[in-house]
Amino acid sequence: MKRIFLPAGGALMAAGLLASGLAGSAQASSDMADDPMAGSTREAASIASFWAASNGAALRQATSYTWDAKQVRRLVSKGGYTPDGNPGTVNPTSDAPRSGGGQNINLPKTIGKVFFVDASGSYRWCSATSIQSNYKNLVATAGHCVYDVDGNRDTMNKWVFVPGYYQGKAPWGIYVGKTAYTHYDFANYEDFDRDYAFVTVYNGIQFDGVKQVNKSDYNRFTGPKWSRGGHYYIALSKDAGRLGDAVGGQGFAWNQSTGKVVRAFGYPYAPHPDGHKAYSGVTPKHCYGKTTGKAVGASWLKVEEHIGLKCAVTPGYDGGPWMMNYSNSKRLGYVNGVTSTFADQDENDRIDYITSPYFDGETAAIYNEAKKFASGKIVGPNGELFK
Image 1 (cartoon, rainbow, N blue to C red):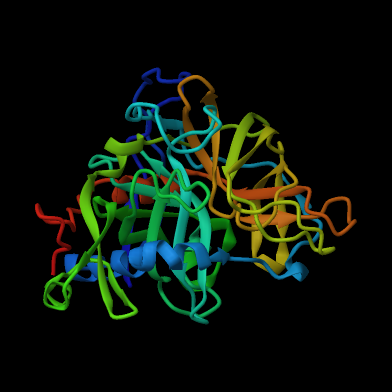
Image 2 (cartoon, rainbow, N blue to C red):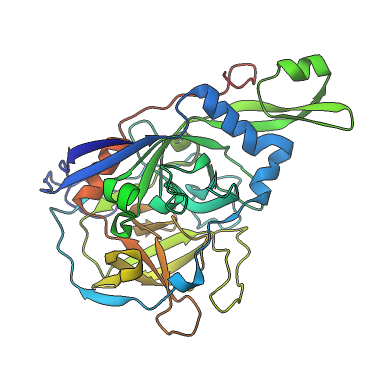
């Protein structure tokens, strides 16, 4: 893990959806951790092959990265917030043509699932979104959906993002994580006040079908492949391009006032603490409302300054974006939080609140560092995965 000290500057004053602002500066500093996920195209190709093999069997087997029911308790009000600088925004970028994917046209194409293998070897997933960056290759999610706090490892294994995930389909491709960026305090001390992460991803990979081949061609092929009953099959691959070119990228906002309306998106799946299971995890859901005006805390998770939102979703929603100034027609907004924890304010064993870290100047510094780096492609001109 590399530890980098960054100044959080270059903020823009918020001036409404897609409007430009006045230059400002945030006075905070950020202690950032960055870790390689797939440090080479060869490793990225291997990860893509793992998830795509046998027609995406591993994707279908994955379950949500669930919480222990004992961690779903009543939140405590902690008082007001003290932003560490001027409010700022980075504008979103429009997505590609609006066809395919989920059935609800009001849902953004940018949201999807991140899939990974946890310390126990189980196939898991969280929610996430594509976010604007210099090279259109950045994903925003929760820190605990990237860094393995249970297994005490730096990052999850075989991490990929699938935007527009819908009923087992990957309409815009599979994007392998290259480098993860988060706050040092989360990566090392599990400080959930910093439970956010930004991940650069390689160009996506899409599959055009399956081809039966002879054993010799099967052995030479470097992409996803499998054999069954003495027959050999390969997945026909193509480069899906950069993430932002395929689905667009949401904007980013920090040091904003609280008590404002947001829309939160994600894929809820796990049961409530009382065992009631309301969601399948197959399709994305959303919540709409005002965030808490005061900070909320959960001492058992080292949470002191989260914001809360009334929302009766369940784990699997982890990492999904909270967007301010969301345009239903454009399906674009500004990511101003990610789902981190779940709470039971009524104390009836049903989740009724979700929380997010407050995005401040330190969050902005980590985002500004992560957005600067390119990734590259993993699919060759003939559909082969690079070694």
